[in-house]
Amino acid sequence: KGAGFPDIAAQGLRYDTCTDAFFYPISGTSAACPAATGIMSILAQARMDATGNSTGLGWLNPTLYSLGADDVASGDMAFNDVTDGTNTYCGADDGFPAAAGWDPVTGWGTLNFGKLKGLFEAL
Image (cartoon, rainbow, N blue to C red; front, side):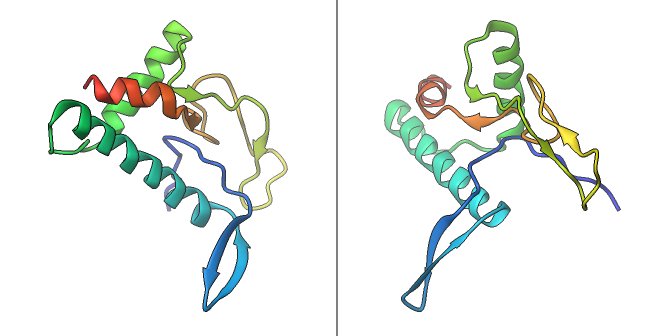
């Protein structure tokens, strides 16, 4: 059984959802993944609008890791680095701590939409 680590993070607490006309909050990956995917879709559309390239963004990991490494080197952040907190795994007392740069809790951090929009439009 392997462990998975994130590439990016997103707010994942108390997203209002509606099912059968009933609103209730959800949290966790079920909230964060659709939010991050929606942001990536808007970035893809911004790139298409700016460049006329309709091929989309493709596999994002190489781009995300390149941008993350550039962030660390330059301090000009495409991601909002999460440096405080711990994610305990299966109730363990000593979970993974957040740290500067990439970490196994939040990856590179949350998406900085304004910065990423400019970078993706230039791809």
